[in-house]
Amino acid sequence: MIWNLDASWLLMAIAVVSMLSFFLGMALDGMMAKDSFGPTGNAAVITAGFFLGIFVANSYGIYLNDLKLAVVVGICSAFVAVLVLLLGKAIVARL
Image (cartoon, rainbow, N blue to C red; front, top):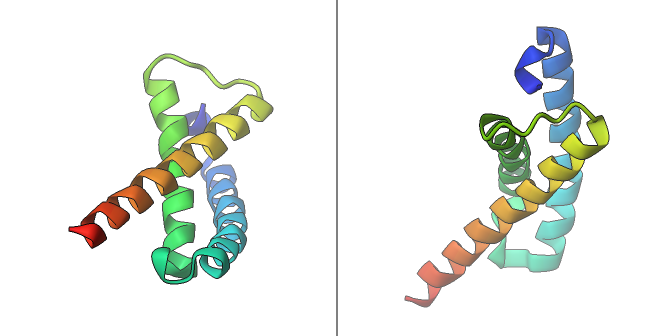
């Protein structure tokens, strides 16, 4: 689904997701302070997780023709990416 987009629509999708991720990253940084990756790091992880989740769903044969379903898959995978990386950071900090 995502690779069938025109280049201009793909860049617009990346820009919109990046902007919303930055706002969310700032909120996460405010709540978690030194435990997070900073606003820009949080935004990068959320954006990468969003598009990686959609790509993985497409590679498993799940076609996300509906925009609402694609957004849900992307948001869920973004939060999973943040959770996994923060758990990894917490484990490394404890060792």
